[in-house]
Image (cartoon, protein in one colour):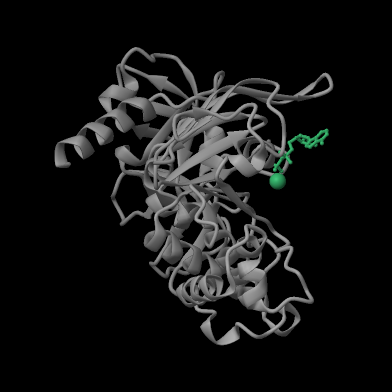
Length: 373
Ligand SMILES: Nc1ncnc2c1ncn2[C@@H]1O[C@H](COP(=O)(O)OP(=O)(O)O)[C@@H](O)[C@H]1O
Ligand SMILES: [Mg+2]
């Protein structure tokens, strides 16, 4: 068992605190992705788990044992970096088996184990090659195999795919997920790429400037972002934001510029007059049929995606993007009615930036999951 418990962990470089009291529980066998923009403290957090960076305050435990003072090599973590750090003069087999050799394992046992692990990541035919004779993806697999062979309790990945071209990145992402499904080691994967995070994670941790904004399954975080920060970071194209004010009596939000959108009773209750940011996902807005209620916006331009289109509108000067598989040719400046189901209206307190509804919705989802389980 290798669960990881992070308790109020802080990191300061001199007077400069860059991780501000992070707490997180990672379950045994879970694949957790830490997602956030460059500079938000992802690598620092990962390196503190690995022991490559000292913790300024707080506590980290791996498999129930506090590791604050433990040397990196005694923590049972294997780290996979962006540059694979392979030995160029050694064969693939020797690269993979190097740790076993250092540990004094005899040649026959080593060969047996190297062959098995290399096979498990699809490197069986390449054992005699040098890293220079491999593609980027194959080198990445060698790096993975070298980590796997040590049978670590925990895998730590720091943006391992960032240097690869788009196609290879996708292949390697699939490879990493397959390997995880097979060996089920606890994994913590750092990335700034929301798509990579969404597709790999059992649970995502969204970081912002050294703090955690939200922890949840990719679907939880997409459907019920806890703050405008998360809402704007997750989803492509990004969520639309419009300023407005809630009117409880009308069970609606009045958008600056005139539109009135129906909202759920839970969202309206107790929030009369509150200034809000209204979040609308481009894919949850429809092009209304004539006579259907909705929000009127002026057509600006469209982008063809092949299977769908992105339509760009302006509502009183505020941009609204719609992702739709309907193909309609509007003229510039034309008023178009947009259909907005009340369940798809995300409301964020304009002052705190926190969601008015995510907590309740997420509790309901968690309860439903328990019920099914
Ligand atoms: N060794 C260091 N000394 C001083 N500041 C550092 C050091 N390492 C990282 N930082 C700062 O800590 C912050 C977080 O960095 P990092 O964890 O690398 O972010 P990320 O991995 O999310 O891009 C950044 O502002 C960075 O400049
Ligand atoms: Mg980093």
